[in-house]
Image (tube, rainbow, N blue to C red; front, side):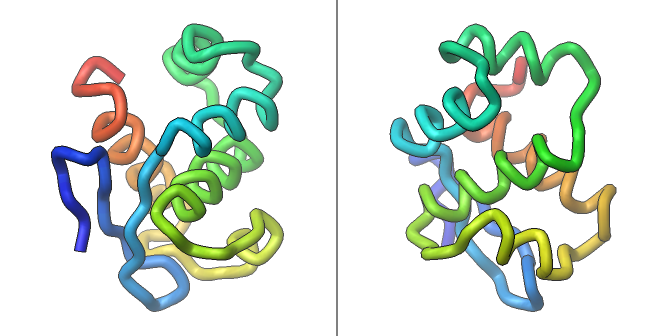
Length: 104
């Protein structure tokens, strides 16, 4: 079960409720994977209003690994996500808000 003050959220992925969290390690992974350079670069990328399926996979994958799940982005990409693409985007938004606050 997710602990909100730790920046955790729960989401149904692959038919299972999983906890996601953008730990410092997960954020460092995202900076590298998305070639953002730093946290400001990540924020600018996400606030631009354009996000790719690759971005969603990177965010959710990093969040799952930060939440303690041993899953690759390739394995994640094969799983069903409750609500489909819209659901994946909503999970990413909830995760970013849990990590950075409502302004995310």
